[in-house]
Image (cartoon, rainbow, N blue to C red; front, side):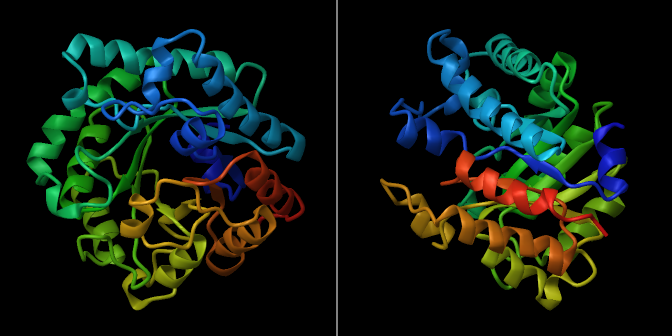
Length: 308
């Protein structure tokens, strides 16, 4: 089955863990301030670190008998961050090619990842929808042409830019997912209610997203958000995915840390898996502060449960 069919059929899917926090804190490599972990794609020696991170996710998924989604390290590889469009297209294409090689003999799908134009924790800097559509279109096209299986707009803090990114992704032939940073009151960081953001993108963008996601916050915050009136009717219906932080800190505090703040794997796995038992989310994985240990603990719970 293709990835959308699997999700619609109720299958659990494991996603990868953190990339940039692991590159910096676990492997001791520099995260480029402009293009982030995408820099490692340009260096054959350091590319081995990406192979280790993504390969570890796939090994966890294979052991648990789960399909997986691995996202390209292109969160910061948009047009503003590279010297020209040729360089941008090359880097995004090279990242997809790397993933195609890593996933050989694995039941895995490649998500071509785009990030917000500016800071994921600063919604006031986000472009409007028309500007965002123009900005993100080139990277979406590059990832699609390179052979990604789906597109993933990761950690968008503001509705306007998320809608523009959805328009850009919809312009390709690929299924796509929009992922929001949420607060516990069920709102995006710009104050837009999650329910309203999902409903408007579904209504205004065609084809609509395959599903929606919450990312880059602790699962307890996601659970609080999904239990609020601002998420009524969305959880388990259109919002089906969570990529969780291992820290309970708020986004603003987490952004200022110079070290990892990481909950132990079993505790985090319990909190993450509760997003399925309580709300029906079934595409689950990690974000900042997570590693193979967190994925392994989560995958054991997913493998031991028959989806409803």
